[in-house]
Length: 80
Image (cartoon, rainbow, N blue to C red; front, side, top):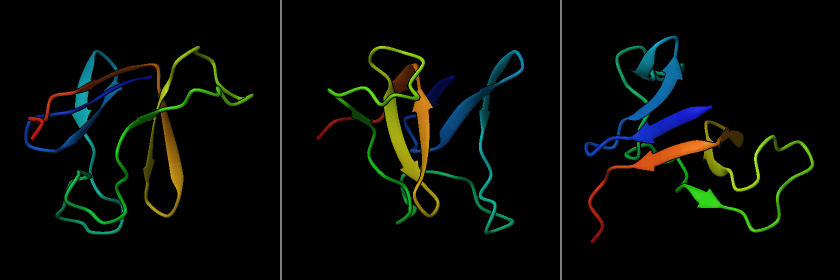
């Protein structure tokens, strides 16, 4: 799966032909992003889980311990 966190902190995931900003399932007028306390920092695991389809996936924990596995990930946020 392809995904990105854009420079504004919005999570975008590949849907069809392009990347789509994801809406929060718990707040009707909000988007998923790094401002949410349930949004974890992207991490690249050294030990690849057995269910992984890729060799070096990026994992992002979101919404009540759900884990997104992204094999093509870009973080466009500025580093401090």
